[in-house]
Length: 330
Image (cartoon, rainbow, N blue to C red; front, side, top):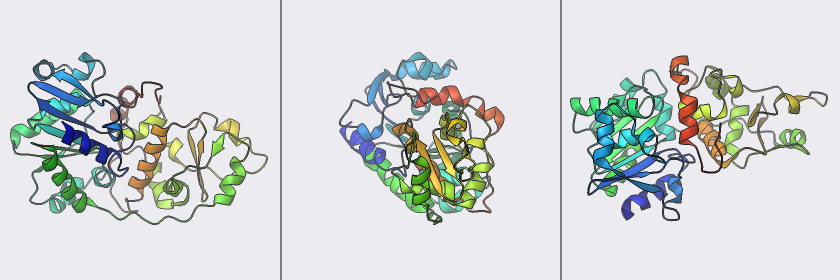
């Protein structure tokens, strides 16, 4: 248990692996599934009790009866079905930036076949979190029981092992193989951003990497095509990508503050990004992760955006996933 918590804390403090409360971990001990509670941050492992105990037999009975365990056990992770479906003692699910940059490509299964040659991995095409993903993991294991790495299309990665050391070894090897150098974005215009945000409810983000969303044309073209993965949906209930399109630099007479009062962030064309003073730490972490993902996608990458049907089920899931105990993001 302690080794898992130590690993969770290290992973949770790496923004290239985990953003806010995304990702989860679990350990199966003496018939109990200890799993990260919904909304908890893995970075808080050791400072807070991030794991809750569930009866493993009861959770697996839910799967057998086609019931989502997350609906039956209050506070349980949305991905409880996934963890219960795995035979491994330890499981770790992360939103690895580099992995996502591959997982949103339509040619990902082919490209990853070469990159991950020799590793015990499988590709899982995008499926909604919860029971649907848990069942897909079951089907994949039925075909290849010795799989320890599952790359989730438009989502992230799941790793299973008998101890935390084995999981960390797999994770480090995966990170090495899928690493993509981020594209260097045009510098942000801090003077202009400070000028328009002065004496307003808008401010500059602490993470300078976020500004690439406003200055990098390739990133803007990528985001203009649609939503790439579910975490983007925390900013909007709409499936349209308008929120992720830059706006022109406003002039002094432009009532832009009123027009965008409900936005959490604004991508200013060619200048950078400003964020609302009401933005939460969770949203800022997601925005940073998004900037890192798109900076690793080139202009010719064949992308697979989430369909309207796939997006229609996300808002309720996201509200559950990123509930902090104080405020929901939707």
